[in-house]
Length: 296
Image 1 (cartoon, rainbow, N blue to C red):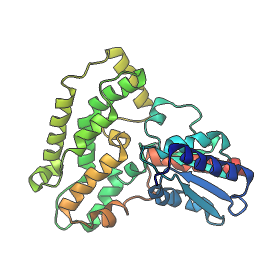
Image 2 (tube, rainbow, N blue to C red; image 1 turned 90 degrees about the horizontal axis):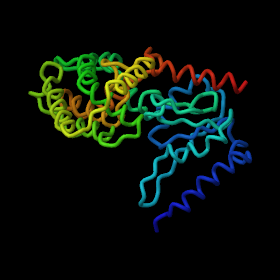
Image 3 (cartoon, rainbow, N blue to C red; image 1 turned 60 degrees about the vertical axis):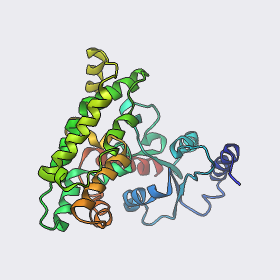
Image 4 (tube, rainbow, N blue to C red; image 1 turned 135 degrees about the vertical axis):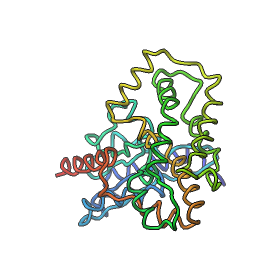
């Protein structure tokens, strides 16, 4: 028997009440609420240095019923109940870029800064470094490919973000990411010269989607670019702000074609390290430090 939305609401509310009442916290020092069970590994890795001597519990959102509901939307309903013992861990999606208020460490909310946790596993420099340890005489540079991908998607990303900011319809992030999802990325010829064929196919898909899209004013586009530049988002790294599963899956398709089916677990997953040094990861580490300072 399918669980109804009202029952799911009641379940989520019960968790929040129990946490607030201390019935769960009586057994744990800190409870971390995450969007999905698959998010736990990412947040565990980041939080490990601060939680070694603490009893912690990660609570994923439970998806049930026929209607698709995002874990983030439910978790953010607990925003007012978040505290030093009950910390919310969520994907930024586009909220960080759009400047959503109250979405920060001060309110005991940890976010990915990149679109989602999957993007962090595709940070080009670490990915390329790990790839170099496993490649079997295959000349492919993921740093070059992902920089090229960012350049290909940049203009469309700016237009999408402008429309999102102005509440205009006609071109969404789903539409843009679909231009990547449709590309197989597993044909040897397309992977020559660091994936030039893959980038050409993505470019073609984007151009076709953009043909009938209403443009925005130069002034509005400039404001979006200014906001992106303030956050350090540019033509070399905006792949970190695309939907994470699209980037992750594209990289994985390419990697499996270059290596074999072991690419995801031999290269892609191990490439993420909390010791890496790039803006989006450093922001998370800064927030974690702030949350634990507030807790003392």
